[in-house]
Length: 407
Image (tube, rainbow, N blue to C red; front, side):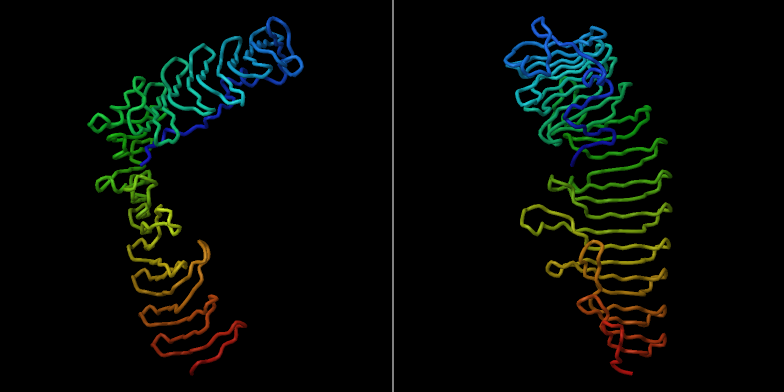
């Protein structure tokens, strides 16, 4: 399963001007720069002046005289080392290739001179070790960036030094900067890790073995469980339970995680704040129809319940070729059947009645029977009195008229 915890969020790999470096990397449109090449002024917007030149271009703010940018030019093109400055101090440096991609080591510094970001670009994408620091030098995030999140790892810290987020890789990847071998339980002993909120409160607890989450709990601000996840049955299934703030169960889900691919839903249940089950859905794992080998979860049954525990509605889903059918039964709050029928599902929001549909009196006797045609219109209708005596039996037509079968 994917180990991504509430405090960790993925970020885009492309660098975008941040508030901290806004003045350095995205200078004001009102600022005027004077640039020089080999000690002489150069207009970098004029292709005739830059054509064929190779060397460093340095640009300063005309008003302050402070360095704002310097970059390497090769044969008139911005290729190679590039640096941005803030208040005359180095704020960011990286290397640009001929196609404009960043390549190799890239760094950023805070206004106080502290290194706050260091990463490596490969073919324009961040790969390998990526480290971030707070302005006081304490570690903020240490990450191994791979082709996919499953192959990478990340550890994130609060400014206080408390652990904020953790995602384990398939093996230890962050040593010697972080002992993720121990944190992720790769040393043969399961590891219990606590994660903290920005205010310093316990936000979550995770138990890991060989990098795989065995059990995880996130908490509300008052310390009560908000969400629990746990592997079951030899790691073949995962159970997820969500709670209301008062501690009562809100939702429960069961997943099939045996394939190592995306988790497949097996069951989900919803609860009232009183703890009463109000809805339940069951799923079946089946192969996709296109023979791709992938599997998916297909809804096979659904039920809703009154707060007194009695069934309110039960639906069973089956397939007739490529057509999905739903057999529906509705009940009174005393558990007596009051209506049943079959529907063809032409879409998620379109249910077309087919076959025979029945309605019942409170005494259990049949009150009405509608027989539907292929277009979802009633073709025949029978109505009974509560005593059980047949009142009418009519054929129905498209224009709303009817004709008695018998009297």
